[in-house]
Image: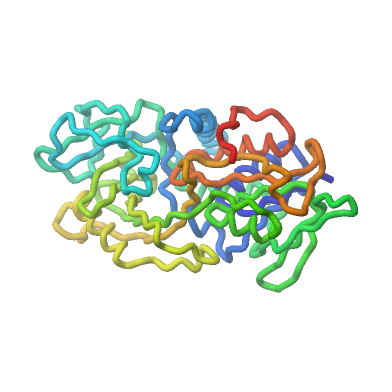
Length: 411
């Protein structure tokens, strides 16, 4: 049997398993996750902002496909109730900025402290339907619309991940957790035939027969590849970028205000970063944008150590932009977070079948019967691009033509 093992159960891994399980026996799909807590990094602590057409040309087709899939699944499975799917409006907010001032948008905006909204076309907003009532404003502030109607949406990413994971397991996909892949093995033809999995609770090792492997371990993808293919000369071009976040509740954003949709607010802070603020169903407001490339990637997501100085800055941002008063008296802090996003130098994800020569001494079955694939490097767009990436990867792994062209998203 052409068994597929997916290493990493974040949003990309479970999305791929979801689509794979629609076209092959679910029992032939294995999900492997070493973290003792599922979705303990970017997939569980992301904002959950979805965009249809905010992407560079090489990613645009995957972005549009993914947006359509998010909408379709939400309609089919009551996504509003189960994972907070809701239409959203993108807004650019600048305190006291003069009309006509713009910032250039570069490929490295994330590392440089810029905003994903920089460079997007804007139009002055006169309709109060686009201006969130929870955003604190002063005279001279500029609020502009940066999204066309129906082109952005909002979800709770943790709840979507939990839905996809449960659906996969209910179908019969095999989940190994907590467990990690420690080695791959070949048959007498030197072709990939199994992968050894260590249950980190019981310290029991199991050889899982497999002919196909997908590495979708986010920021940990390079480490996974080096462990399994130590004789390879190739280093995967995936690195990590840490980002802190804050989730608060405001009396100015509640269930009675959700009828007009959620909001995504992009602005510039005084601390050298560009805050991103998202309202979500359930009275939550997510505050982030504070990234740090100097934080080392931990061995496991659960070993991340939140920096209080970063949380303090985010709280100050919440006070300045969301507070009714000069303090946080009427804002309730629900959760603080730290996640590590997988990033690439190009700023675009990698969705590719790895060349045989990159696997060192291991070979794989020819044609559509074997291979090793990589799906990682989505940066801040992992949630938005998740379903499109998962659908395309499932098609590639099964030897079917992908729904959209991803040839520019190779190594």
